[in-house]
Length: 287
Ligand SMILES: NC(=O)c1ccc[n+]([C@@H]2O[C@H](COP(=O)([O-])OP(=O)(O)OC[C@H]3O[C@@H](n4cnc5c(N)ncnc54)[C@H](OP(=O)(O)O)[C@@H]3O)[C@@H](O)[C@H]2O)c1
Image (cartoon, rainbow, N blue to C red; front, side):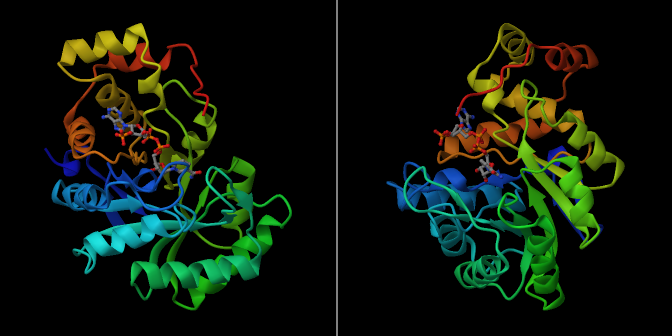
């Protein structure tokens, strides 16, 4: 059981990571706010993920806020060679379940400084603009990240929650190594962005990758049964087969679920199963 069974994907031709990562958003308290109820358990999940070959961990300053980045450092620092932590900035958190945009240059600058300290690194491997801020030009946000990269505080720049037009505008300012949008076999709004990323060697990180598992339809259950697998594992295997640039980051606060998810790295669907799921009706999750 290892994340390496999913193969690897390159980030900007500079770093190679196993194609099954870990999303550290759910390690915080309810409403993605405050510390987890089970701190010891959260640290154990992170350590087990790395033991199981996960070398790409996704987080953000807004998860907690700060809590997710602090837990990652507490569990994993000093980081094993090859471990890539991708964080993000661009939100403020006034309270539980509350998210307000702020991708102004001054906020992004302060956010990067805060993430460097909390994660105890001198340079952030991958820094993602969490979401474009409607009140700030995308160019101003990206210029700031490009400057921070020139200053050596960020190694690689990435985007999240963007359209193809955003990616094209951002790439005129700084190379973009990954795009993180909501996506699963039954939630395909961003199919054209996946195709664009594939054509341009940009990794695509689907968030809420298990959304489809929650609304497990008949097709999903049938495929799962045929493989002695769970619907969640099939949903992840579908993503991995969708494109070689796909890098799912399923999140969980449970070691048992983590192990179940990592086993999906070695699950291969037949062409017929893959296509049957691709044609399943859109079941866009409400969240
Ligand atoms: N860029 C963005 O705007 C954005 C937005 C949302 C998320 N993200 C990132 O994407 C990551 C994943 O997204 P997500 O957490 O929304 O969705 P997810 O990984 O699809 O789902 C997480 C939920 O599924 C449960 N789960 C996980 N594995 C399971 C399993 N094997 N069986 C049953 N339930 C399972 C988890 O609960 P348990 O703890 O009980 O297992 C959790 O409630 C996040 O951690 C975060 O890093 C990014």
